[in-house]
Image (tube, rainbow, N blue to C red; front, side, top):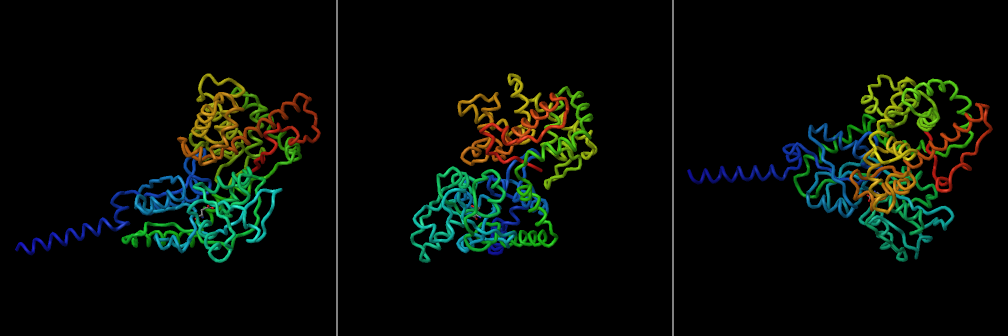
Length: 473
Ligand code: GLU
């Protein structure tokens, strides 16, 4: 009898043990999928409609299909990410990670969900390496523990022993900033990341591909008991690829890079002549309702949509004032494509933001700061104002905050902020563009609404803004 009891207990213990070791059961029992990622524009960040990013969108979908919540942890850098995975503190790493043999030895890799070639980047006007031998003796910058560090190491061992590899515990966007500021002559990054970020660093160029496209994969911890979860992950990725959703998500999250271009002065003056007259009275009416300067409202509408009431961005932002679906819902807007509703929504949203700013911020800074919040979100603006104070600036003055906003794209700064990575440079460009359109519209109105001669916007930009890439839709 006693022997039977012991056997039963042993069997139960064994079963319990199995349960503990099965990753899929654990996720289901916990009701939560724990994912580690990087806080970067290609993976996971916050914009005006909340958390977003390609990897985030994918894992959120996976979690919902598994019927569990999603818990995102942001790694400081790649060594930190792999440490978390190694220790089993997370169930999955989804961070634009390349599939490599060395990683496959340590972890369970999913099937590939994309691919991208690694590229060598340099700054225009400096020496452009065209072959591996051109890279010798000068340090090549790579993210520590990255697939690129592994590839360069392999090349070194394969005979290119004059390659100098400089590994830094940074994200690829930091490496791009370092090449841009000439702290390093070259860096190796993924082409997919470079394309999204290139608009921020218009002086960076591709020197050459470092081999062919490499597959990207998600990683699960390396221990046994992962098979069930791995099968689920692979089946999910296969379904997403077959239905075409993987491709459309990629387009939605990476596609905006294609929308960035330099606007010529002619586009603006042409639009002012051809499109604005149709909406001028409507813009004036709405501006009067919200007690704001109609030139400002017109300038915002131009920056948002080029005065096109049917404008649509790949991220689903729509209409004359490019409102997100969520903002439109909050503002009780039924039809975002109706220019009157859209203008009213945008004006009200801006006025709300202005009201929410601390009382001691005076105009015009109040307007510029509210516009920055309109573009990047109030939380990120708050982060930038805190950074401004820390840097000895005045958080109530736009020129001081403007200097700090781009820091929200550098991990050494955004790491310690409350809301993390944000397209701070884009917010600066956004506000500066509107200010220029605003003043041009005012001038032309003062000139008695005569047809205006083409204006060279570049010439009107203050020095600091001249280098910026103007954001077009
Ligand atoms: N794909 C890279 C890796 O797996 C990370 C992204 C990059 O550094 O460009 O290490």
